[in-house]
Length: 305
Ligand SMILES: Nc1ncnc2c1ncn2[C@@H]1O[C@H](COP(=O)(O)OP(=O)(O)OP(=O)(O)O)[C@@H](O)[C@H]1O
Image (cartoon, rainbow, N blue to C red):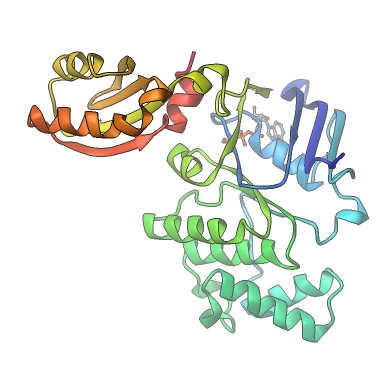
Protein backbone atom coordinates (compact mmCIF):
# COMPACT_ATOMS: atom_id res chain seq x y z
CA UNK A 1 0.00 0.00 0.00
CA UNK A 2 1.24 3.52 -0.82
CA UNK A 3 2.49 5.51 2.19
CA UNK A 4 0.44 8.70 2.60
CA UNK A 5 2.26 11.99 2.20
CA UNK A 6 0.85 13.32 5.47
CA UNK A 7 -0.93 11.32 8.15
CA UNK A 8 -2.27 12.85 11.38
CA UNK A 9 -3.98 10.80 14.07
CA UNK A 10 -5.61 12.29 17.15
CA UNK A 11 -3.33 15.28 16.76
CA UNK A 12 -3.76 17.99 19.40
CA UNK A 13 -1.75 21.00 20.43
CA UNK A 14 -2.34 23.02 23.56
CA UNK A 15 -0.88 26.45 24.40
CA UNK A 16 -1.25 27.48 28.05
CA UNK A 17 -4.19 25.16 28.62
CA UNK A 18 -6.02 26.16 25.42
CA UNK A 19 -6.45 23.85 22.42
CA UNK A 20 -4.94 25.32 19.24
CA UNK A 21 -5.50 21.97 17.47
CA UNK A 22 -8.10 19.56 18.77
CA UNK A 23 -8.00 15.88 17.78
CA UNK A 24 -7.19 16.17 14.06
CA UNK A 25 -7.43 13.01 12.00
CA UNK A 26 -6.62 13.12 8.29
CA UNK A 27 -4.50 11.65 5.52
CA UNK A 28 -3.27 13.41 2.40
CA UNK A 29 -1.63 11.94 -0.67
CA UNK A 30 0.92 13.49 -3.02
CA UNK A 31 -0.37 15.42 -6.02
CA UNK A 32 -2.07 18.74 -6.65
CA UNK A 33 -1.54 21.61 -4.18
CA UNK A 34 -3.52 21.28 -0.94
CA UNK A 35 -5.12 24.34 0.65
CA UNK A 36 -5.39 25.07 4.36
CA UNK A 37 -8.01 27.67 5.28
CA UNK A 38 -9.64 28.99 8.39
CA UNK A 39 -10.27 32.23 10.25
CA UNK A 40 -7.59 34.02 12.30
CA UNK A 41 -6.47 31.86 15.19
CA UNK A 42 -7.94 28.65 13.69
CA UNK A 43 -4.65 26.77 14.09
CA UNK A 44 -3.18 26.86 10.55
CA UNK A 45 0.29 28.10 11.57
CA UNK A 46 0.35 25.67 14.50
CA UNK A 47 -0.43 22.76 12.16
CA UNK A 48 2.19 23.86 9.60
CA UNK A 49 4.75 24.35 12.39
CA UNK A 50 4.11 20.79 13.62
CA UNK A 51 4.37 19.37 10.08
CA UNK A 52 7.62 21.32 9.59
CA UNK A 53 9.08 19.86 12.78
CA UNK A 54 9.40 23.33 14.40
CA UNK A 55 6.86 22.45 17.08
CA UNK A 56 6.14 19.15 18.85
CA UNK A 57 2.47 18.26 19.19
CA UNK A 58 1.05 17.97 22.71
CA UNK A 59 -0.48 14.59 21.76
CA UNK A 60 -1.26 12.36 18.80
CA UNK A 61 0.89 11.19 15.92
CA UNK A 62 2.06 12.86 12.74
CA UNK A 63 3.84 11.13 9.89
CA UNK A 64 5.28 12.58 6.69
CA UNK A 65 6.19 9.87 4.19
CA UNK A 66 5.87 7.54 7.18
CA UNK A 67 8.39 9.46 9.35
CA UNK A 68 8.01 11.86 12.27
CA UNK A 69 8.48 15.54 11.32
CA UNK A 70 12.11 16.56 11.75
CA UNK A 71 13.40 12.98 11.20
CA UNK A 72 16.74 12.69 9.38
CA UNK A 73 15.04 10.73 6.57
CA UNK A 74 13.04 13.86 5.69
CA UNK A 75 16.03 16.16 5.14
CA UNK A 76 15.77 17.43 1.58
CA UNK A 77 12.31 15.85 1.19
CA UNK A 78 10.26 18.39 3.14
CA UNK A 79 10.71 22.14 3.25
CA UNK A 80 8.79 25.01 4.76
CA UNK A 81 8.33 28.71 4.21
CA UNK A 82 7.33 30.19 7.54
CA UNK A 83 4.91 33.11 7.66
CA UNK A 84 7.67 35.51 8.75
CA UNK A 85 10.69 34.18 6.82
CA UNK A 86 13.63 36.56 7.25
CA UNK A 87 16.82 36.93 5.23
CA UNK A 88 20.16 37.93 6.78
CA UNK A 89 20.99 41.53 5.76
CA UNK A 90 24.76 40.92 5.77
CA UNK A 91 24.95 38.37 2.93
CA UNK A 92 23.99 38.43 -0.73
CA UNK A 93 20.95 36.46 -1.86
CA UNK A 94 23.00 33.86 -3.68
CA UNK A 95 25.34 33.42 -0.69
CA UNK A 96 22.38 32.68 1.55
CA UNK A 97 20.83 30.21 -0.88
CA UNK A 98 24.20 28.48 -1.40
CA UNK A 99 24.51 28.23 2.38
CA UNK A 100 21.10 26.51 2.65
CA UNK A 101 21.97 24.18 -0.22
CA UNK A 102 25.24 23.26 1.53
CA UNK A 103 23.25 22.44 4.69
CA UNK A 104 21.49 19.79 2.62
CA UNK A 105 24.85 18.16 1.93
CA UNK A 106 25.58 19.52 -1.56
CA UNK A 107 29.18 20.30 -2.57
CA UNK A 108 30.00 23.98 -3.10
CA UNK A 109 29.75 23.58 -6.86
CA UNK A 110 26.43 21.72 -6.68
CA UNK A 111 25.13 24.29 -4.18
CA UNK A 112 25.93 27.20 -6.52
CA UNK A 113 24.12 25.44 -9.38
CA UNK A 114 21.14 24.65 -7.15
CA UNK A 115 20.92 28.23 -5.82
CA UNK A 116 20.94 29.54 -9.40
CA UNK A 117 18.26 27.03 -10.43
CA UNK A 118 15.85 28.04 -7.68
CA UNK A 119 16.42 31.77 -8.28
CA UNK A 120 15.66 31.18 -11.94
CA UNK A 121 12.47 29.32 -10.93
CA UNK A 122 11.22 32.44 -9.12
CA UNK A 123 12.50 34.70 -11.95
CA UNK A 124 14.97 36.54 -9.74
CA UNK A 125 18.32 35.55 -11.18
CA UNK A 126 19.20 39.21 -11.81
CA UNK A 127 19.31 40.11 -8.13
CA UNK A 128 21.47 37.13 -7.08
CA UNK A 129 24.42 39.30 -6.07
CA UNK A 130 22.37 41.88 -4.17
CA UNK A 131 21.79 41.98 -0.45
CA UNK A 132 18.22 41.58 0.86
CA UNK A 133 17.84 45.35 1.49
CA UNK A 134 17.19 45.92 -2.25
CA UNK A 135 14.27 43.49 -2.31
CA UNK A 136 10.67 44.63 -2.31
CA UNK A 137 8.31 42.67 -0.05
CA UNK A 138 7.15 40.61 -3.05
CA UNK A 139 10.69 39.84 -4.18
CA UNK A 140 11.71 38.84 -0.63
CA UNK A 141 8.78 36.42 -0.58
CA UNK A 142 9.90 34.93 -3.90
CA UNK A 143 13.46 34.49 -2.56
CA UNK A 144 11.99 32.71 0.47
CA UNK A 145 10.04 30.42 -1.89
CA UNK A 146 13.27 29.82 -3.82
CA UNK A 147 14.85 28.78 -0.53
CA UNK A 148 12.00 26.34 0.07
CA UNK A 149 12.58 24.78 -3.39
CA UNK A 150 16.28 23.99 -2.76
CA UNK A 151 17.07 20.31 -3.20
CA UNK A 152 13.78 19.61 -5.02
CA UNK A 153 11.75 18.65 -1.92
CA UNK A 154 8.72 16.41 -2.49
CA UNK A 155 6.61 18.33 0.05
CA UNK A 156 6.65 22.14 0.40
CA UNK A 157 4.73 23.81 3.23
CA UNK A 158 3.89 27.47 2.60
CA UNK A 159 2.32 29.58 5.33
CA UNK A 160 0.44 32.48 3.70
CA UNK A 161 2.82 32.83 0.74
CA UNK A 162 0.92 35.77 -0.75
CA UNK A 163 -0.07 37.69 2.40
CA UNK A 164 0.57 41.41 2.00
CA UNK A 165 1.62 41.17 -1.66
CA UNK A 166 0.29 43.40 -4.45
CA UNK A 167 -1.81 41.74 -7.18
CA UNK A 168 1.13 41.43 -9.62
CA UNK A 169 3.28 39.63 -7.07
CA UNK A 170 0.31 37.48 -6.02
CA UNK A 171 -0.01 36.34 -9.64
CA UNK A 172 3.72 35.69 -9.89
CA UNK A 173 3.79 33.62 -6.70
CA UNK A 174 0.68 31.73 -7.82
CA UNK A 175 2.23 30.88 -11.16
CA UNK A 176 5.50 29.79 -9.49
CA UNK A 177 3.50 27.38 -7.31
CA UNK A 178 1.46 26.12 -10.28
CA UNK A 179 4.64 25.55 -12.33
CA UNK A 180 6.49 23.81 -9.53
CA UNK A 181 3.59 21.62 -8.50
CA UNK A 182 4.49 18.94 -11.04
CA UNK A 183 7.71 18.44 -9.02
CA UNK A 184 6.39 18.79 -5.45
CA UNK A 185 3.17 18.69 -3.45
CA UNK A 186 2.47 22.09 -1.91
CA UNK A 187 0.44 22.67 1.24
CA UNK A 188 -0.60 26.32 1.26
CA UNK A 189 -2.31 28.21 4.04
CA UNK A 190 -4.16 31.32 2.96
CA UNK A 191 -7.08 33.58 3.71
CA UNK A 192 -7.57 34.14 0.00
CA UNK A 193 -10.18 31.62 -1.11
CA UNK A 194 -10.05 32.73 -4.74
CA UNK A 195 -6.35 31.96 -4.78
CA UNK A 196 -6.82 28.51 -3.23
CA UNK A 197 -9.75 27.85 -5.57
CA UNK A 198 -7.43 28.40 -8.53
CA UNK A 199 -4.55 26.34 -7.18
CA UNK A 200 -5.95 23.52 -5.07
CA UNK A 201 -8.09 20.45 -5.69
CA UNK A 202 -8.30 19.66 -1.99
CA UNK A 203 -8.81 22.03 0.90
CA UNK A 204 -8.66 21.50 4.65
CA UNK A 205 -10.86 23.82 6.68
CA UNK A 206 -9.87 24.49 10.31
CA UNK A 207 -12.14 26.29 12.75
CA UNK A 208 -11.11 26.78 16.38
CA UNK A 209 -8.53 24.03 16.05
CA UNK A 210 -11.11 21.54 14.73
CA UNK A 211 -10.97 20.09 11.23
CA UNK A 212 -14.31 20.59 9.51
CA UNK A 213 -15.88 17.88 7.35
CA UNK A 214 -14.75 17.89 3.75
CA UNK A 215 -17.17 20.10 1.87
CA UNK A 216 -14.57 20.72 -0.78
CA UNK A 217 -14.33 17.21 -2.20
CA UNK A 218 -17.04 15.53 -4.23
CA UNK A 219 -20.03 14.67 -2.06
CA UNK A 220 -22.87 12.32 -2.98
CA UNK A 221 -24.94 15.35 -3.99
CA UNK A 222 -22.22 16.57 -6.36
CA UNK A 223 -22.18 13.21 -8.16
CA UNK A 224 -25.88 13.51 -9.02
CA UNK A 225 -25.94 17.29 -9.52
CA UNK A 226 -23.76 19.70 -11.48
CA UNK A 227 -23.37 23.38 -10.76
CA UNK A 228 -22.68 26.50 -12.77
CA UNK A 229 -21.79 29.75 -11.03
CA UNK A 230 -22.72 32.90 -12.93
CA UNK A 231 -21.47 36.36 -12.07
CA UNK A 232 -23.82 38.82 -13.76
CA UNK A 233 -23.74 42.53 -14.44
CA UNK A 234 -26.49 44.39 -12.54
CA UNK A 235 -29.70 42.46 -13.27
CA UNK A 236 -33.23 41.85 -11.88
CA UNK A 237 -32.51 38.92 -9.54
CA UNK A 238 -36.08 37.65 -9.17
CA UNK A 239 -36.64 37.54 -12.94
CA UNK A 240 -33.26 35.92 -13.57
CA UNK A 241 -34.03 33.19 -11.07
CA UNK A 242 -37.52 32.60 -12.50
CA UNK A 243 -36.22 32.31 -16.10
CA UNK A 244 -33.25 30.08 -15.20
CA UNK A 245 -35.48 27.87 -13.07
CA UNK A 246 -37.64 26.78 -16.04
CA UNK A 247 -34.73 25.85 -18.35
CA UNK A 248 -34.57 22.13 -19.20
CA UNK A 249 -32.65 20.11 -16.61
CA UNK A 250 -32.38 22.88 -13.99
CA UNK A 251 -32.94 21.56 -10.47
CA UNK A 252 -32.45 24.69 -8.38
CA UNK A 253 -31.29 28.29 -8.72
CA UNK A 254 -29.88 30.26 -5.80
CA UNK A 255 -28.71 33.85 -5.48
CA UNK A 256 -26.14 33.73 -2.63
CA UNK A 257 -24.94 37.28 -3.15
CA UNK A 258 -25.68 40.30 -5.29
CA UNK A 259 -25.45 39.45 -9.01
CA UNK A 260 -24.22 35.91 -8.35
CA UNK A 261 -26.32 32.88 -9.24
CA UNK A 262 -25.68 29.19 -8.72
CA UNK A 263 -27.55 26.91 -11.08
CA UNK A 264 -27.84 23.29 -9.95
CA UNK A 265 -28.71 21.00 -12.85
CA UNK A 266 -29.04 17.41 -13.92
CA UNK A 267 -25.77 15.99 -15.37
CA UNK A 268 -27.75 14.53 -18.32
CA UNK A 269 -28.09 18.03 -19.83
CA UNK A 270 -24.46 18.99 -19.19
CA UNK A 271 -23.55 19.54 -22.83
CA UNK A 272 -26.46 21.97 -23.33
CA UNK A 273 -26.53 23.86 -20.04
CA UNK A 274 -24.04 26.63 -20.88
CA UNK A 275 -25.77 27.28 -24.18
CA UNK A 276 -29.24 27.41 -22.62
CA UNK A 277 -28.07 29.92 -20.01
CA UNK A 278 -26.30 32.07 -22.62
CA UNK A 279 -29.39 32.08 -24.86
CA UNK A 280 -31.60 33.03 -21.92
CA UNK A 281 -29.23 35.86 -20.88
CA UNK A 282 -29.07 37.12 -24.45
CA UNK A 283 -32.82 36.92 -25.06
CA UNK A 284 -33.45 39.06 -21.96
CA UNK A 285 -30.70 41.53 -22.77
CA UNK A 286 -28.87 40.85 -19.52
CA UNK A 287 -25.08 40.70 -19.37
CA UNK A 288 -22.79 38.32 -17.56
CA UNK A 289 -19.24 38.77 -16.29
CA UNK A 290 -18.17 35.22 -15.72
CA UNK A 291 -19.52 31.70 -16.06
CA UNK A 292 -17.71 28.94 -14.23
CA UNK A 293 -18.43 25.28 -13.78
CA UNK A 294 -18.87 24.08 -10.21
CA UNK A 295 -19.25 26.22 -7.13
CA UNK A 296 -16.69 28.66 -5.83
CA UNK A 297 -14.57 27.43 -2.93
CA UNK A 298 -16.29 29.98 -0.67
CA UNK A 299 -19.66 28.41 -1.51
CA UNK A 300 -18.38 24.87 -1.03
CA UNK A 301 -16.76 25.60 2.33
CA UNK A 302 -19.19 27.93 3.98
CA UNK A 303 -22.57 27.59 2.37
CA UNK A 304 -22.97 23.95 1.32
CA UNK A 305 -25.49 21.84 3.13
N1 LIG B 1 3.13 30.73 20.95
C1 LIG B 1 1.85 30.77 21.33
N2 LIG B 1 1.51 30.86 22.63
C2 LIG B 1 0.22 30.87 23.03
N3 LIG B 1 -0.84 30.80 22.20
C3 LIG B 1 -0.56 30.70 20.88
C4 LIG B 1 0.79 30.70 20.38
N4 LIG B 1 0.74 30.58 19.02
C5 LIG B 1 -0.57 30.54 18.69
N5 LIG B 1 -1.35 30.61 19.80
C6 LIG B 1 -2.82 30.56 19.84
O1 LIG B 1 -3.22 29.35 19.20
C7 LIG B 1 -4.36 29.55 18.36
C8 LIG B 1 -4.02 29.15 16.93
O2 LIG B 1 -3.05 30.07 16.42
P1 LIG B 1 -2.42 29.94 14.94
O3 LIG B 1 -1.40 31.00 14.82
O4 LIG B 1 -2.00 28.53 14.71
O5 LIG B 1 -3.70 30.27 14.04
P2 LIG B 1 -3.77 30.68 12.48
O6 LIG B 1 -4.92 29.92 11.92
O7 LIG B 1 -2.45 30.49 11.84
O8 LIG B 1 -4.12 32.22 12.58
P3 LIG B 1 -3.81 33.42 11.52
O9 LIG B 1 -4.71 33.19 10.35
O10 LIG B 1 -4.21 34.62 12.31
O11 LIG B 1 -2.35 33.37 11.19
C9 LIG B 1 -4.73 31.02 18.53
O12 LIG B 1 -5.74 31.09 19.53
C10 LIG B 1 -3.46 31.67 19.01
O13 LIG B 1 -3.75 32.79 19.83
